Amino acid sequence: MAAPPPPAAAPLVIAHRGASADVPEHTLAAYALAIAQGADFIEPDLVMTRDGVLVARHENEISGTTDVADRPEFAHRRRTQTIDGTDVTGWFTEDFTLAELRRLRATERIPKLRPQNRQKEGDEGIPTFDQIVKLAKAAPRPVGVYPETKHPGHFARIGLPMEAALLRVLADNGWADATNRVFIQSFEVNNLKALRQKTRLPLVQLIAADGGPADVPGQSYQDMLTPQGLAAIATYADALGVEKSLVRPRRKDGSLDQPTGLVDAAHRLGLKVHAWTFRPENVFLPVEFRRGNRPEERGDAEGEIRAFLAAGIDGLFSDSVPPARTAADRMGPRLQASTPQPPAD
Image 1 (spheres, rainbow, N blue to C red):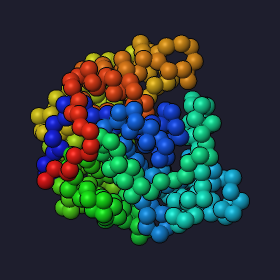
Image 2 (image 1 turned 180 degrees about the vertical axis):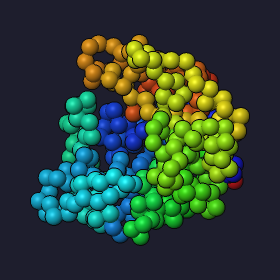
Image 3 (image 1 turned 45 degrees about the horizontal axis):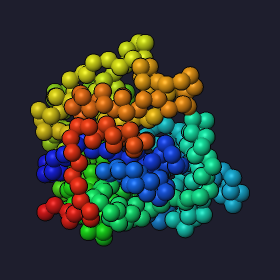
């Protein structure tokens, strides 16, 4: 198992797809704002282009996050394919070169909840992973990247393996061994095991409340949370990235229940726990943290995050950095630095 990153002075604040509550997600503007707001890490979901370039999109199907459906020159690219056992129809990054994708503009993924973000549609394109790493490196204080490989098994099957491309971008930017600046995460298992043989960068096994890893048929995420399952994860990963309900579920009335004990079980095996995803709008919050009557209104996101930090999590993914930063800073002083520090040896 790779050496874990140095202990943080406070829980890590991971900007989920950038400052996605305030700017359309997975754009350079969203990542830059998250850095300005105090994020420790910026988190890009990575998919592949036809010519083998890693770009940031929530999914490889991009009709919900770009204006591709409004581009008549690409109408013929719409198709249906099976991804991880599910038929998906739309436009896929693997059918476009990077040059073609750069002609598209980013759009807001959940416009009914974030109508203000629609005013910024058209301002930004699709960034490459290389651009995102360079943005983090240029920050006036230490900032890391926390990439997720999306559907790595699918991309490998169509001749576009992701792992070598990801490691190459990090190496080209001098972060091949930056164990204090990079986490690599995936919902799949075998690509993490393959990465373990190629890098000592911290690896994160993502775990959802339902379902299971697409590349291990018959295995559920619940199986992976048993003592035996956690012990197996600890042989190749350094942390768990868990759906937050696995740390503190909700009662039937929508209020927050007590911790499950998962954090303590993971810590006993040397695994960090990073919980996802914290969002500021009422519709996403436990009832006791909602404010106002409309689902799109923002509630007490800081209060919810503090409740999870009290359960011992080591980091959190948040669409909104300010409440996460404030809550995390209450847990202890941050490591201050005026310039980015060199990667740990």
